[in-house]
Image 1 (tube, one colour):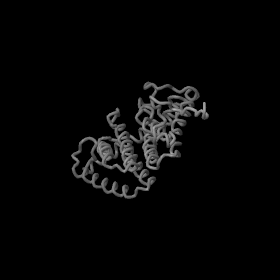
Image 2 (image 1 turned 45 degrees about the vertical axis):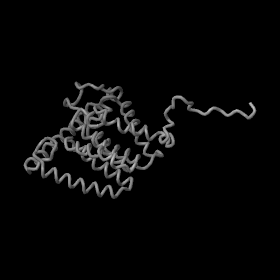
Image 3 (image 1 turned 180 degrees about the vertical axis):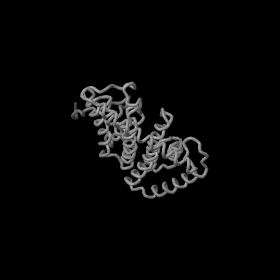
Amino acid sequence: MTGLAEHPIEAGIVASFGFIMGLGLALHTRKWLIALPMIAINAYSLRYSASLTALLGFALASLTLCLYTKSFKVLFSGFAIGAVAVAAMLTLSTGTAGLPATAPGEACMNLRAITRRCKFVQCSWQKAIDMIDGGTLAAGNGYSSADLPFDMEIHNGFVASVFHFGFLGFVSQCLLIGFFVSKVRSDAPRPLKGILIGCIVVFALSYLSGPAQARPTLWAPVMLLGGFLGVQRKERISGAALPIFGRPTLESPKLPSGR
């Protein structure tokens, strides 16, 4: 799944989605040998993501999924494996891209860089809000890089939707989000709903702290999961929601005997 991403930060978010899907499918089907490669590949690719949001979303979504499905053994096992993996990476790290820095000085420099970036992102939010006027609320500014504050994508989905598309664009964003969030109340099995909840956690963190309008891979997993869970349970299991070629989809009416 990370091959579809266009940026290292976006790749980390996609990897978090993939990990949650693999874990949820393993809990649902109990076929761990089939799901483990998907889980392992996405977890391994997170070390190259360069995204703290993806790592935080990965951790919170995994915790939420395990608690929602009451998979406490999996939660404790994953915590132990994660602790060992982090310790191994810290020990074997050589300072390459995507790996944590081992030297205290490098760690302080990275922390300062992250702090500066957070302050700059916060300034871009404020600048975007200051640029929103009556005309922007009515029709938006369109999606043009020339109009971006500080020539930088707006790292907040709600502010960006109003800035680019106006009030109606903001409403449409809320309706799209409400569509897949509402599917948590579907009749799907608990692990499948847990997958959606975990993906919503990753989506929310990235939507509120990143350029959601520029990342279609952020929307695709939750929209597809919402559509899948919106299908009635019997149709989802039997596949009757799809037309079966070669036989009618509706039963022919029975004629009275003798006719």
